[in-house]
View 1: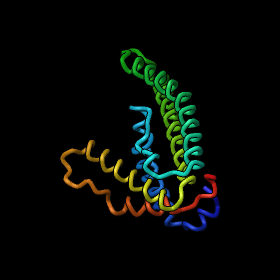
View 2 (view 1 turned 60 degrees about the horizontal axis):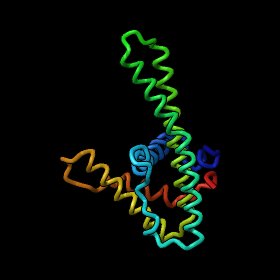
View 3 (view 1 turned 135 degrees about the vertical axis):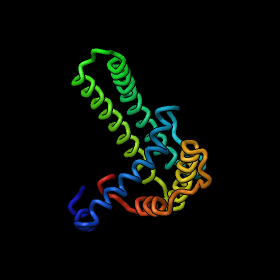
Length: 179
Protein backbone atom coordinates (compact mmCIF):
# COMPACT_ATOMS: atom_id res chain seq x y z
CA UNK A 1 0.00 0.00 0.00
CA UNK A 2 1.45 3.36 -0.91
CA UNK A 3 2.22 5.99 1.72
CA UNK A 4 -0.23 8.34 0.00
CA UNK A 5 -3.00 5.83 0.56
CA UNK A 6 -2.09 5.34 4.23
CA UNK A 7 -2.00 9.09 4.85
CA UNK A 8 -5.29 9.63 3.07
CA UNK A 9 -7.01 6.80 4.91
CA UNK A 10 -5.74 7.73 8.37
CA UNK A 11 -4.85 5.60 11.38
CA UNK A 12 -8.16 4.45 12.83
CA UNK A 13 -9.93 4.11 9.51
CA UNK A 14 -7.10 2.07 7.97
CA UNK A 15 -8.36 -1.32 9.11
CA UNK A 16 -11.90 -0.50 7.98
CA UNK A 17 -10.53 0.65 4.61
CA UNK A 18 -8.53 -2.56 4.23
CA UNK A 19 -11.55 -4.65 5.23
CA UNK A 20 -13.69 -2.92 2.62
CA UNK A 21 -11.04 -3.43 -0.06
CA UNK A 22 -10.90 -7.12 0.82
CA UNK A 23 -14.70 -7.36 0.58
CA UNK A 24 -14.62 -5.80 -2.88
CA UNK A 25 -11.84 -8.10 -4.03
CA UNK A 26 -13.85 -11.08 -2.80
CA UNK A 27 -16.87 -9.80 -4.71
CA UNK A 28 -14.86 -9.34 -7.88
CA UNK A 29 -13.26 -12.74 -7.48
CA UNK A 30 -16.64 -14.34 -6.94
CA UNK A 31 -17.95 -12.71 -10.09
CA UNK A 32 -14.87 -13.03 -12.27
CA UNK A 33 -12.42 -15.62 -11.00
CA UNK A 34 -14.62 -18.38 -9.64
CA UNK A 35 -16.44 -18.82 -12.96
CA UNK A 36 -13.00 -19.23 -14.47
CA UNK A 37 -12.33 -22.24 -12.25
CA UNK A 38 -15.53 -23.89 -13.40
CA UNK A 39 -15.96 -22.78 -16.99
CA UNK A 40 -12.74 -21.01 -17.98
CA UNK A 41 -14.80 -17.98 -18.96
CA UNK A 42 -15.93 -14.74 -17.42
CA UNK A 43 -19.30 -13.25 -16.63
CA UNK A 44 -18.66 -10.10 -18.66
CA UNK A 45 -19.97 -10.00 -22.20
CA UNK A 46 -17.61 -7.37 -23.57
CA UNK A 47 -19.58 -7.18 -26.82
CA UNK A 48 -22.45 -5.55 -24.91
CA UNK A 49 -20.26 -2.58 -24.03
CA UNK A 50 -20.13 -1.15 -27.57
CA UNK A 51 -16.35 -1.17 -27.72
CA UNK A 52 -14.49 0.72 -30.40
CA UNK A 53 -12.19 -1.29 -32.66
CA UNK A 54 -9.18 -0.15 -30.63
CA UNK A 55 -10.87 -1.01 -27.31
CA UNK A 56 -11.92 -4.38 -28.65
CA UNK A 57 -8.35 -5.13 -29.72
CA UNK A 58 -7.01 -4.12 -26.30
CA UNK A 59 -9.58 -6.26 -24.50
CA UNK A 60 -8.77 -9.21 -26.76
CA UNK A 61 -5.06 -8.81 -26.02
CA UNK A 62 -5.79 -8.71 -22.30
CA UNK A 63 -8.06 -11.74 -22.62
CA UNK A 64 -5.25 -13.61 -24.42
CA UNK A 65 -2.92 -12.68 -21.56
CA UNK A 66 -5.47 -13.96 -19.05
CA UNK A 67 -5.82 -17.24 -20.95
CA UNK A 68 -2.05 -17.65 -20.91
CA UNK A 69 -1.85 -16.91 -17.17
CA UNK A 70 -4.78 -19.22 -16.47
CA UNK A 71 -3.37 -22.08 -18.55
CA UNK A 72 -0.08 -21.84 -16.65
CA UNK A 73 -1.51 -21.63 -13.13
CA UNK A 74 -4.61 -23.83 -13.28
CA UNK A 75 -2.78 -27.16 -13.94
CA UNK A 76 -0.54 -26.49 -10.94
CA UNK A 77 -3.63 -25.88 -8.81
CA UNK A 78 -5.20 -29.12 -10.02
CA UNK A 79 -2.02 -31.04 -9.20
CA UNK A 80 -1.83 -29.54 -5.71
CA UNK A 81 -5.51 -30.40 -5.17
CA UNK A 82 -4.83 -34.01 -6.16
CA UNK A 83 -1.85 -34.16 -3.77
CA UNK A 84 -3.90 -32.70 -0.96
CA UNK A 85 -6.75 -35.15 -1.59
CA UNK A 86 -4.34 -38.12 -1.54
CA UNK A 87 -2.85 -36.90 1.72
CA UNK A 88 -6.26 -36.34 3.28
CA UNK A 89 -7.35 -39.85 2.28
CA UNK A 90 -4.22 -41.43 3.73
CA UNK A 91 -4.48 -42.56 7.36
CA UNK A 92 -0.74 -42.11 7.93
CA UNK A 93 -0.14 -38.83 6.10
CA UNK A 94 2.50 -36.54 7.54
CA UNK A 95 0.68 -33.52 9.06
CA UNK A 96 3.57 -31.22 8.16
CA UNK A 97 3.47 -32.34 4.53
CA UNK A 98 -0.30 -31.96 4.48
CA UNK A 99 -0.06 -28.39 5.76
CA UNK A 100 2.73 -27.58 3.30
CA UNK A 101 0.68 -28.83 0.35
CA UNK A 102 -2.39 -26.93 1.56
CA UNK A 103 -0.35 -23.72 1.88
CA UNK A 104 1.18 -24.24 -1.57
CA UNK A 105 -2.29 -24.78 -3.02
CA UNK A 106 -3.54 -21.60 -1.38
CA UNK A 107 -0.58 -19.60 -2.76
CA UNK A 108 -1.34 -20.82 -6.28
CA UNK A 109 -5.04 -19.95 -5.90
CA UNK A 110 -4.04 -16.53 -4.61
CA UNK A 111 -1.72 -16.09 -7.58
CA UNK A 112 -4.58 -16.92 -9.97
CA UNK A 113 -6.94 -14.56 -8.15
CA UNK A 114 -4.39 -11.75 -8.29
CA UNK A 115 -3.78 -12.32 -11.99
CA UNK A 116 -7.52 -12.27 -12.69
CA UNK A 117 -8.07 -9.12 -10.66
CA UNK A 118 -5.13 -7.30 -12.27
CA UNK A 119 -6.35 -8.35 -15.73
CA UNK A 120 -9.87 -7.14 -14.93
CA UNK A 121 -8.53 -3.77 -13.76
CA UNK A 122 -6.49 -3.37 -16.95
CA UNK A 123 -9.58 -4.16 -19.04
CA UNK A 124 -11.63 -1.66 -17.06
CA UNK A 125 -9.05 1.06 -17.76
CA UNK A 126 -9.67 0.56 -21.50
CA UNK A 127 -13.31 1.60 -21.06
CA UNK A 128 -14.81 5.07 -21.02
CA UNK A 129 -16.96 6.23 -18.09
CA UNK A 130 -20.27 5.04 -19.57
CA UNK A 131 -18.83 1.64 -20.44
CA UNK A 132 -17.39 1.34 -16.92
CA UNK A 133 -20.88 2.01 -15.54
CA UNK A 134 -22.33 -0.71 -17.78
CA UNK A 135 -19.57 -3.08 -16.67
CA UNK A 136 -20.37 -2.33 -13.04
CA UNK A 137 -24.03 -3.19 -13.68
CA UNK A 138 -23.05 -6.49 -15.30
CA UNK A 139 -20.89 -7.39 -12.34
CA UNK A 140 -23.59 -6.43 -9.84
CA UNK A 141 -26.03 -8.63 -11.73
CA UNK A 142 -23.55 -11.52 -11.74
CA UNK A 143 -22.88 -11.15 -8.01
CA UNK A 144 -26.63 -11.10 -7.33
CA UNK A 145 -27.06 -14.24 -9.43
CA UNK A 146 -24.24 -15.99 -7.58
CA UNK A 147 -25.73 -14.98 -4.23
CA UNK A 148 -29.10 -16.30 -5.32
CA UNK A 149 -27.51 -19.57 -6.44
CA UNK A 150 -25.65 -19.88 -3.14
CA UNK A 151 -28.64 -18.86 -1.01
CA UNK A 152 -31.79 -19.82 -2.93
CA UNK A 153 -34.12 -19.25 0.06
CA UNK A 154 -33.17 -15.57 0.41
CA UNK A 155 -35.89 -13.38 -1.10
CA UNK A 156 -33.84 -10.30 -2.04
CA UNK A 157 -31.37 -10.33 -4.90
CA UNK A 158 -30.07 -6.88 -4.03
CA UNK A 159 -26.56 -6.36 -2.78
CA UNK A 160 -26.29 -4.74 0.63
CA UNK A 161 -26.03 -0.96 0.34
CA UNK A 162 -22.65 -0.91 2.06
CA UNK A 163 -21.20 -3.31 -0.52
CA UNK A 164 -22.72 -1.29 -3.36
CA UNK A 165 -21.23 1.90 -1.95
CA UNK A 166 -17.84 0.22 -1.57
CA UNK A 167 -17.92 -1.08 -5.15
CA UNK A 168 -18.87 2.37 -6.41
CA UNK A 169 -16.00 4.06 -4.55
CA UNK A 170 -13.43 1.53 -5.75
CA UNK A 171 -14.70 1.61 -9.34
CA UNK A 172 -14.51 5.41 -9.36
CA UNK A 173 -11.03 5.46 -7.83
CA UNK A 174 -8.17 5.76 -10.28
CA UNK A 175 -5.31 3.71 -8.84
CA UNK A 176 -1.93 4.84 -10.25
CA UNK A 177 -0.30 1.61 -9.01
CA UNK A 178 -2.43 -0.53 -11.34
CA UNK A 179 -1.37 1.25 -14.53
